[in-house]
Amino acid sequence: SYLNDTQVSTEVLVSNGDDIGKSSALFPNSRVTHYPHDNHRLLNVRATTPNSWFLQAYAHQQDWASVTLRDSGLRNTSDYSSTTIGGLLSRTSQSEQSTQRYGLDVTRRHGVDITEITAEPEAEIASRNVVDDGTEWTAGLFWERTWYLKGLSLQGGLRADSAEVKVASGSADHSDINLQLTADWQLTRAWDLTIEIGSAYRLPTLSELYFDGETPRGRLVGNDALKSEETVGVQLSLLYDVGDTAFEMTASANRVDRYIERILLSDGLESYRNLKSGELWGIDGQIQRRDKNIEHTLSWQWQHGESSKGETIADLPPPSIRYAASWQRSDLTLGMDLRYRFARSRSGPGEIPLGSASILGLSAQWKINPHWIVQTSVTNGLNKNYRTSATQYGPFDMGRAINVKIDWRP
Image 1 (cartoon, rainbow, N blue to C red):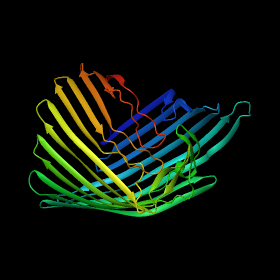
Image 2 (image 1 turned 60 degrees about the vertical axis):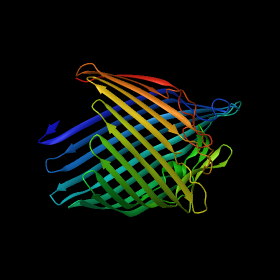
Image 3 (image 1 turned 135 degrees about the vertical axis):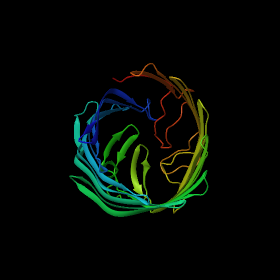
Image 4 (image 1 turned 90 degrees about the vertical axis):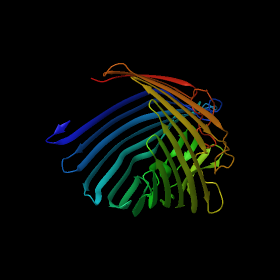
């Protein structure tokens, strides 16, 4: 909608979940977990003014609980609640020679309360506050500018951040300035080469620092000695596009200091730690072919990481290759998505080798009229049983599922 030439849009999302099961490698022999309720309220407002100012404000309230029942009869109930508010204010200006954008974004999560209740056979019920009135906030000022030259565009960016995580027992904060430089060469009408160099940081989350409680994968204990993670990286991308055929290949290399990874301390007990330093490499790409009614996409990705001591860095996905196709005629669209995840023998701390997996998805959409759309999809169509991550007690993916969605718009 428009208000005095200002374009305004609003989104409201209400989600209520009840009795949601949670998978893990420990289910059902030694640990069964479900969520009695999982409720969310989300409000998002965006406004764009005629003089190129953009404003966004949002709020997210969440309230959920998890119940974990162990083979010993011990029952742990965790209750979680928090409210997140945030906003973005930015302005974009353009000329024939350059484009400039600058602004401020702020996010604050407050009222974070996590309570754990333990019920043991023939014993009194014990309750404790895992996190009491926790707060996370971050604020960032940013500026970026792109200069357009003949066959070349150059972009420079600067971001100044300040962040803090706080609970009753302690706090952590970090301020940093990060840079980004990008050069994009138009080699020919079809070929394009881009190189990006930049830095970034990540403050440990409230859970990584202070959480101490039961999860579907076992007990998780935060580490309040964690330091901020810092990364410097370079990325090189090559693009070929002639309309009906496109090819893209990207290679990246990153050096990370104090990388935060989840590790296994002992059987059933996990925590976090900082690596002194490490290196991450990655290659991904895709080939796309578009005809009148059908589109084919073949894509792939590979990532590898090692610490300064030669250890494999945890939390990295195994290599995979993917083929997707879609066919459209009139008001009917059909789709197929087939992904092959390769086996991986090397694993990080607290991880296990992963087997290969073939994952098939199918979809269909029928636009009955301008107001009604019917969508249906099949996920994990081959009904394969595979882990979603290499974490020792990580969950298995859901088996074959059929989804139907009916959409009505006035």
